Length: 383
Ligand code: FES
Image 1: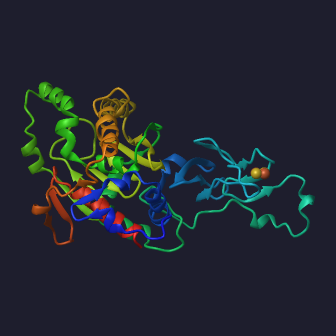
Image 2 (image 1 turned 135 degrees about the horizontal axis):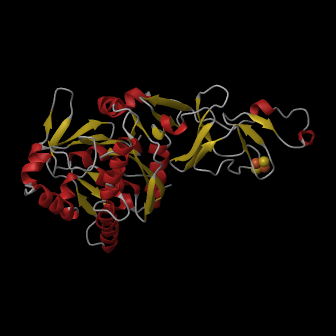
Image 3 (image 1 turned 180 degrees about the vertical axis):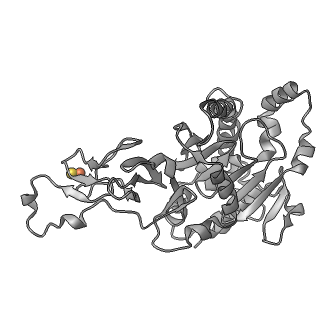
């Protein structure tokens, strides 16, 4: 890492430098100062609903296991690293098991991380204390309305403080009675993780990148979408802590939520899906979309939700493939061309409104939400 990081070279009022997407040093800084410090979403409780259930995921660059104790039903988040010589002890994406056995030399742990067996233990002598050799648990874990978060930092704001003004929206989602039982649709792209965060809450692009989708919707309904009017009726808001909100004027027919929500840095809600962003390297990102099923819905109703999800977000749909090309591939290509280093995120700064809670809002074509992300980004990377 550079010894001197001058934030003013990367961000200024209404603009960000393209190097924040391409410099490996910036990516390392983000992993250290954001993903290893703040709360990172790791699972929904429905994914580990039964005692013994587990899933594997990452916190920034760190592979972890999220499990539900086979004996006590508690939730655990542990580094996926054997205490012997560091092999990962669980490779499956999800499952149910009472034990994790390291394949390298056979050390065996309970699914809450306690070491229960090290083969040929006499080779370690009497001072070897099994009780101290369990899988290491991450410093903090907390759950809000079924959404489990973990933090690699011993201290810092509580999860509730971190979520702040985003909590009522999470409450609305949780009140629907959701469960993530349909598995995940995954894709990856060769560009920076922040592209996906920004694009998730960027209604400005809808009438261009997704024009075909709107044209077909319009044809079905016998109307003509007036995008200028739509943007005026809709709102994007900065909820603080990097979280932001896009409130839709109409049901687009692609999901149940009347809003898109970003929980910075790696979680978002779009249509009827939970979206999780996994930064792999400065120029490679994995994304997992978990369609939200409703516990109280019929099989047919949940199947209809899935079909709607596939129609806009699936591999051969109207939405995601176009975003992958235009919002990610073409921006990456443009950044390489040079000529100008700065990207403009000032749209709507001249007409932002602030309410009594200090929430900044603008019409939905404004870049309030992008500025919300970079306000928190700037604060965290310079701490
Ligand atoms: Fe796991 Fe040796 S690395 S038992």
